[in-house]
Length: 214
Image 1 (cartoon, rainbow, N blue to C red):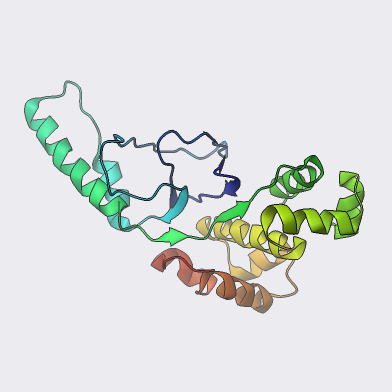
Image 2 (image 1 turned 90 degrees about the vertical axis):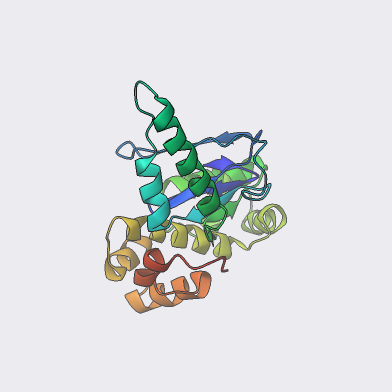
């Protein structure tokens, strides 16, 4: 998803909170189905005023699966759905935040590079190669990353790879497989980088859904 001046990744193990009146663009894998819920803006205290990626709890997942509007909608069913909706909103307000966003920029040269890397997170091109691709010098591109994203190029690309790692984890891939796919020197190097950013080792992250780290 693109919104709030950033790129957001929501694996199947996660959800995205998008406040009302927020311009956004959603892109999904062709083999993924999505569930959208809409909350009346008059309901207050649900989440904040910024976009967030949220770690789904088993309870939230089952609540959403149960929330189906029958045909015809009887008075009894309407009452049950109303009670379910109240629990969904309550659970939504407590879901832990996940650091699965990348700051975006507006400079065309920077966007040329970030779009290329977002489409191919396993791209191993150097800063110099990417600078030539963007039509800029390496120092200029590095300055653009720092000025427009607040991150050095290496930090931005590492965060992108870690976000992609969460997607691979949600598909059941091992740390060894992911390290090879994303260009880490070894599985231990990948695990160390993952732990530094998320505060947990890879195989524990999806099970626990710890709070906002990194």
